[in-house]
Length: 479
Image 1 (cartoon, one colour):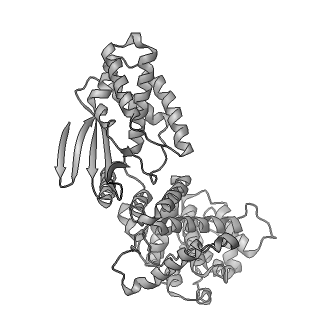
Image 2 (tube, rainbow, N blue to C red):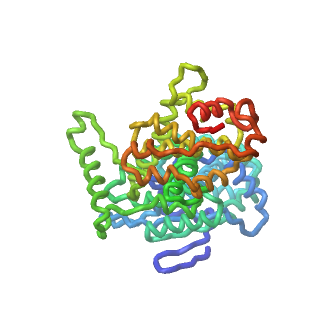
Image 3 (spheres, helix red, strand yellow):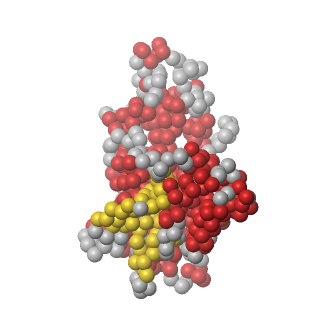
């Protein structure tokens, strides 16, 4: 074992037999469920088997917050990063115990004793898993481990226990622990930016919100990671960026600052924070009042994409709120079959989602732009004058298809940011009534000679003829 110290923080390189003996270690409630699959366990076992001849083999890092429990005079070791690996290593040890006792004739006595002693030791360090998904996955991976570890002989088991190592970072301050977690992942395998936002906002929870923290994290973990990635990368990041007239092509770790804000419980509350604090406090007070047990009412925090983020719990509510908005307007208006009985609004949504060229990348970029506009408008004005706005938004977005034969996302981004006529996102941001938006004039398309030569609106390969007809009938295409 080697150790490096820096103030209250330290790092140790521990062989598995010592790592699994760390006392008072626990997996905090805010951590995600155990999700390693059979392929992850198989990869770990295979790596150990391949490197069993080496004098040392490093299995990765674990970040531990040395949590001094107030009022209990007790120091516990909360795993901030590495709980999936930690749980799997315990599973492997229990599987090896089963194997060496089931097939004891195949192993030397000293290795049987070593495994038994280590198993007896970690039995005194219980880890509690309450999530049903975690329990199911642990059970599955235990059986997988028994099957795959059967190829290990005495040398292989000895290598696992004595030669495999874990780098353990002990950090006294929870904020530093999460910052270290962020930096480790920034250098290693990329996490989604929303994973780093989750870590940031978890540490911003007030100490009195522990139960709420558990509930919110449990809800967050019900979402598919890809869905969360899309909420931020395809919608919220682009809307906020385009409203500021900034290029918004790809959401990366360097952009997560736009989803960080103020600590509402900070002692330094500046005047601009007061309205936010008042709204925050009122919502919590209203929802926690005993009368809610009678009237069953709930008041949602009044989120706005242009408003300042409140760090902590509100971030997770914010994510759920906008995820619901995104799904809501699609369910309300999207139709899959075209017919003349559709309302004007339904026809626009059909043309956006199901036109004959929807399979092309260019159309997917236009759809993303269109959806972002719709979300931004609904966020600010709701469904007031929505039908009138939708026509403006559709024409503004799909005018691009008349101008470009090949449409990449860079062209879409440039169109928004560098548009010499109008940036609808910026207009929505600065206007205070929907009437101001619907009174905006969208410049009709005046086809150039090259445009006329390159295609005909009706029946051409560049655009669905119904979109061309829509532009002509609404006088947005000048023949």
